[in-house]
Length: 256
Ligand SMILES: NC(=O)c1ccc[n+]([C@@H]2O[C@H](COP(=O)([O-])OP(=O)(O)OC[C@H]3O[C@@H](n4cnc5c(N)ncnc54)[C@H](O)[C@@H]3O)[C@@H](O)[C@H]2O)c1
Image (cartoon, rainbow, N blue to C red; front, top):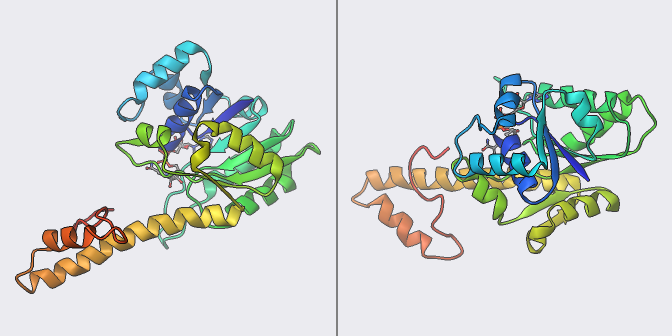
């Protein structure tokens, strides 16, 4: 089974390198030729502890490649992880231009059954929208599945987060796609949660917004502390001893 990673930016490069390290045959592709050129030479365009070492090791093993040829990468892959950027627009909504561009490219190059996996952080129902786009524009009468596998890595510990995940969320609508994705993450089978696609997409947003909520909450408490003689750090420490609350993401400040 060959895996293609479309968009080898922060998430994509880590995904490509770590999936190769799990033993898969991976090809990474990006529209920015410099990123592909560097990655092909074992140079990471981002700094992440351990990433460049794993990149070099897996290039040497021969199961990790990079190409600027998006068409070829799509045609030669059985599973496509889409990890392109989804920047925020002025009105706060996600700019889906890159996801749409990739969906059209997949439609153009759909030569065999593939699973198209959404790894980017996207609005709920995006997988269904990708499915409609590919179905509308595909040139051959070939089957495909869409799936959602949101990414939870943190910048600064991305490799360790990917290789020691606290959970792998897999949103699918067919057994075939489920079996393929569960096999890819077989090493972490005790941490896999299989859901439908909408659920997987909402898990990502619910997790992000819950963490934001904790930081916002402690900042609100910090304002109260400033008006009294209370010390917000000790308040957070005191709250965090309660396992139902936990101590993480209770530090007042900018946070995100
Ligand atoms: N960075 C993080 O910590 C993080 C964590 C979890 C989720 N995410 C989400 O993952 C997604 C990617 O984030 P990122 O930080 O890796 O972004 P990024 O900007 O670093 O990488 C995106 C890459 O996609 C490439 N790209 C754009 N259009 C393309 C196309 N048509 N074909 C091929 N490549 C294309 C870009 O050139 C870029 O290299 C976003 O939705 C983001 O919200 C990011």
